[in-house]
Image (cartoon, rainbow, N blue to C red; front, top):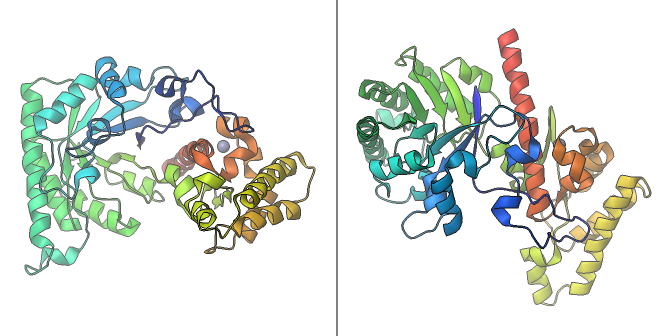
Length: 415
Ligand SMILES: [Zn+2]
């Protein structure tokens, strides 16, 4: 079971100074900053998923790459650009896709199969996913209800995705590409996913990516995999595109799933209300210490004259000083939490984090983590503050995710 991490140009600056919050003057962004696989070392990711929409943009919207980065990716190829062969672990595989979520509003995908093949071929990917159009919905009732409001639209997207997969495979063969092509199955129900997989196998695919899984609950994913299993040829391998529920990976493996990609462990670090820092058997809430000028609520309150900028800056500083002192053991837990709450009352009304912060700080889980991030960043990894700290926590979560995955898969094969 291979875990692919989707690239979104998430990197950390190893020279970032937590005390002064400044970067090295000589830093060159993509060159000096570290990707997750570099920052963590060892075998954390099995593969990297890179989307054409993120690199090249879509009509009307630029991608996340600068023009220079984009040109270098095409020129050097994906392995050199991401420095995939420089780590100590086995080098990750590379997979390309279109990034269908970036254009789901459009009538049709903005790329032709040949344009996508150009991207995969020039960047020299190991695996390339056919052009697809995502179905954002799940309702098995639509299978039998010809009046279902979404049915016609969903069927059209499925047919279009299958037609594009047919062209994509034919063109890939005609162009004699090095990468292994994957066809995409889009569906809205177990039966519709099974139909797409059957057709993709008839077209000639032995590797199939199952799309539109992001909003699906675990039991819906499992129902779909069970239906696919009734048509799946023994040699057909499945990739689950963009899943957010990762608790039943070992069960997915019994239905021919050999790989998946997910950003959820990484993103929870700074998107979730409470599950920000992962350890093997639970999660902790990160301690919010936003920069005064980086928090929209604080900025608005200061601009409106409800809070003084000076007072906010004093409370922010008190939080940072208290956290570092607590980490050294020179002030009490209660004093530290009090400083955090004193600042928090200026910007947060929705949650009372007293209990959560007390638990996080009391257990100090970063002190017991063996990952390079926690070793180097210490208590900074638990602070919900700015992208350097937040992304470090995201990378730490990837390290834990790998351990969870290995444990789950090990358990399964031992069972
Ligand atoms: Zn860690």
